[in-house]
Amino acid sequence: MNFDLPEDLLPLRDMVRKFAAERLRPHSRQWDRDAALPDWIVPALSELGLMGVLTPEQYGGAGLGYLANCVIMEEIARQDASVALLLAAHNGLCLSHLNLAASEEQKSRYLPKLAAGEWVGAWGLTEPGSGSDAAALTTRAVPDGKGWRLSGNKIFITNGNRAQVYVIMARTDPDKGAKGISAFIVERDDKGFSVGPKEDKLGIRGSDTVPLALDDVYCGPEDLVGQRGQGYVDALKVLERGRVGIGALSLGLARGCLEESVSYAQGRHAFGKPISELQAIQFKLADMAMHIEAARLLIWDAATALDRGDDARYKAYVAKLFASEAATRIGLEAIQVHGGYGYTKDFPVERYMRDAKLCEIGEGSSEVQRILIARHVLASATAGA
Ligand SMILES: Cc1cc2nc3c(=O)[nH]c(=O)nc-3n(C[C@H](O)[C@H](O)[C@H](O)COP(=O)(O)OP(=O)(O)OC[C@H]3O[C@@H](n4cnc5c(N)ncnc54)[C@H](O)[C@@H]3O)c2cc1C
Image (cartoon, rainbow, N blue to C red):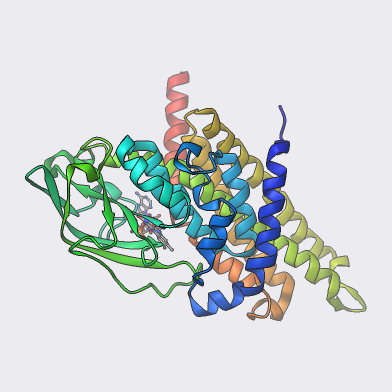
């Protein structure tokens, strides 16, 4: 068993690390304050091939796997989690759904432009009345000739303001519960489609999070993604993969907190010596490091299982839950290491802590991950009995 990162991913890691340190870090504080990312971000990410990480080369993507994606997410989030979330929603949700279920025609039409970053993608499952209980969604897709007319509202949609292409889950068969949900491609300028104002959020403020309104939006048969009635099942598969990426985003934030804390503790003096020499501070740094090492192993294990094509659901729940909760806790401890300065915006750790909290909510809350883990553990015990 080898726990090291494969050698062929080292240049990718170093390239993204350099990019994040040089191009993102100097601006992250301002983007958090402005609650917006500049327009040059997507072209800059595209230049590195990051807008098509998981998309096969035949459609213009980089054709990389989930482990590579996790390396990228960690490195980007280390400096700016809003940029990482932009990538997570684009690659890990929208393109992931298209890669999984789209027809050949749909892939040829959409993937090259999305993978090149000419278009940005978004993914709409959550609604004002349904989040964790996503199968309760009420956006309707009413048959109209060979197509459908979509009406309803989505909320909390990442990249919603910036996207040109949206994968939208809607109910085609009202009496079939979760099996009555289908996925559709909606384009920004489709008649009846509109984007609401950006949410004013606690963290990940640079990333745009918006409500979407669909008012009798026509989708032809060519816009149905996957089989009719398979939209929810496919969405769960997308989330299984996506949440490993959110785990890696959490890991990047946690690592940022540790690195900033080490640097601060070595420079800050109290009682005649650097606070890094105080055992109370050392214990905090040690606990941070321990959780980061464990989170990374869980994430790489889950990502490697996905790359093998295994059923990685359980590994994904565990990795995402552990990493996201560790990141929030490490964020709070990093503020403590920084003392009063940690409570100001002069140091990035308060932002990292605010950013980390999202990872305990999005793509399956901590409570939902625990339910799924417990279900798996109990089913395994029953099967083994
Ligand atoms: C910044 C941000 C970006 C997002 N991006 C997207 C996106 O791009 N696309 C998209 O579709 N959605 C997106 N979401 C939505 C996100 O996935 C949901 O917020 C999340 O699934 C939780 O749903 P909810 O907010 O409706 O909370 P609820 O489901 O109402 O949950 C409220 C609380 O109840 C708990 N709870 C719910 N059910 C149970 C249960 N059975 N047992 C125990 N506890 C339970 C939850 O864990 C939570 O603590 C985003 C959200 C945010 C904040």
